[in-house]
Image 1 (cartoon, rainbow, N blue to C red):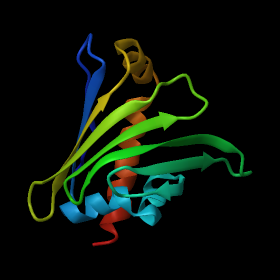
Image 2: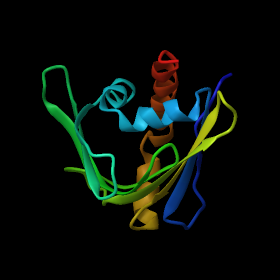
Image 3: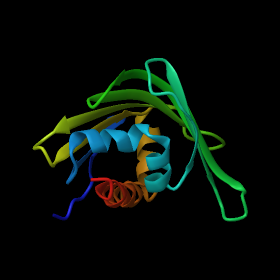
Image 4: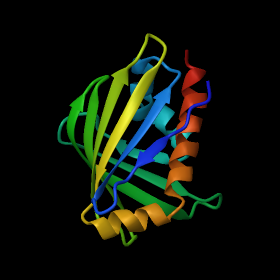
Amino acid sequence: MERKTKIQAEDGKQELTITREFDLPLALLFRAYVEPEIVEQWMGTKVLKLENKKHGSWQFQTSDAQGNVLLRSGGVIHDFVPDSRIVRTFEMENTPFDVQLEFLDFEKLTDDTCKLTMHVVYKSVAMRDQMLKLPFSQGINMAHNRLQNVVSKLI
């Protein structure tokens, strides 16, 4: 089944909601967010740190073919409930974007399908709107497509 990531962003609000259904068991989708080896495959980034626990932290780094750092991002994990929920901050270094707060909720639909709902809160409406002007929706949909492809091979 063809899946597509949906982004809902109401005018005048400093938040957005991202939803995606996956043809994966819930436990596998959750693993895609917490196991560094899997994260690196579908995100195309290096996991420098990933402490999957309340008050843990995380840091990812994306480099070009010559090893030049293109982007470094990180944050703090505020809540961690296996196969259910991750609440974390997300900050990109050396960009004009302020830190954002992300609520990731993982939901079982059937034994073989699940749903991810991400509620993202920005510092301001202007910051959220600036993010949406980037190829944000195409990027997250491509990343979720890669996640589906990478993780389905683990079944």
